[in-house]
Image (cartoon, rainbow, N blue to C red; front, side, top):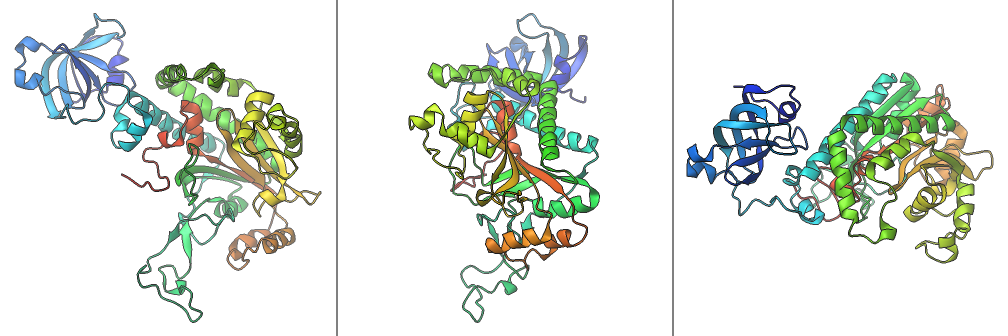
Amino acid sequence: MRHTKVKDLLNSTTTLEEVNAKGWVRTFRNNQFIALNDGSTINNIQCVVDFENTPDEILKRITTGAAVSVTGSLIESKGAGQKYEIKVSELEILGDSDAEKFPMQPKKHSLEFLRENAHLRVRTNAFGAIMRVRSVLSFAVHSYFQQKGFVYVNTPIITGADAEGAGEMFQVTSLPLNNLPKNEEGNIDYKKDFFGKHTNLTVSGQLEGETFAMALGQIYTFGPTFRAENSNTSRHLAEFWMIEPEVAFNDLNDNMDLAEDFIRYVIKYALDHCADDLKFLEARLLEEEKSKPQTERSEMSLLEKLNFVLENNFKRISYTEAIDILRNSTPNKKKKFQYSIDEWGADLQSEHERYLVEKHFKCPVILFDYPAKIKAFYMRLNEDGKTVRAMDILFPGIGEIVGGSQREERFDVLIEKMKALGINEEELWWYLDTRRFGSAVHSGFGLGFERLVLFVTGMTNIRDVIPFPRTPMNAEF
């Protein structure tokens, strides 16, 4: 008999004479009640076993984590909290789970403990919910861009270009590390490497994406990116997923409009399609915050926060205006910021971004026109010669969630900026061709997918919203 998903059984409109369900035991009470979950929903279905007519050796094997198959009738539940339950007529143990060794016992586990068991943590309610929300958000990303006529482009994972100019990249090589070939100058001879040159894992698909936007009009990439940043924080990963749209003939204002519309769409999609999971995650967050001092608790519940983004326009201000606000703010004057704001040109930290969003404006904020010195070479230089057409979107609890810009479409200006930063023109000859042949105004942005999932799920550590986090000194699983 073909099994039915737990979600479909719980959503049934009628009782059924015979059904089959397969899943994993969450709990087994009184030798009679199995809470069964198959991952299709946050909710378990109760399966009632006729323990008097079930052999003891079978009952002993119904333990937390065991995989079982139950056959029986779907009947109206006599217990509170569920509409239907399964009255079991036949039970089969598909896979045993040693109750004394299985780490995911039905009790509260610390997030750190769960990270150490990332291969099993998805069997808990919280991580099942997070990963279903992540999946729905991923679909929403594609849905939005496909509906808008964007072309999905798969940019290279292995690249010779450093899009950010930061140099914090993972090198890719097939050379023997214990016997590296050297050239006449005594340096490593990359001509003998697999690709015949120095290559790395990509930090961004933007540069390649730009070349496609200048032919297809509007494109987006959605794939893994890598940063060899030695940052052991709750906001950084060495491997993460990035969404990067690029649009020909869009200026910075068009870019801000697109980013705001996109974020609203994917959040609404999650609210519409993950109601049970988000309700559970909201309750989890409220419970977690009870242990915090009142001053550190969120002013809004998770669902209130998500709806707040949908219902409020993002505040748009220039970097210069933001610096004035921060310089004159009480935390800055009282030296409460870890990084004080003293002068124009400072690179804003997460504490500054969150102050603007959470304390000053109390809504999402888009900052634009940043100092050229703290932004990448490809951003369009403003007429003042000191700022670029860059924009960042700041969210409550997260800080920066989107970074983007209008790109420098003028060949001569781009060349001058590359020279000033010591960027090799020959390495990026193909990128410069987009300015040589039919250049036009174009813009794009990057959104770290995990930061979006972090915001939507209400989690506080980015390691908890990706299946297997990669961080400094950690590549387990």
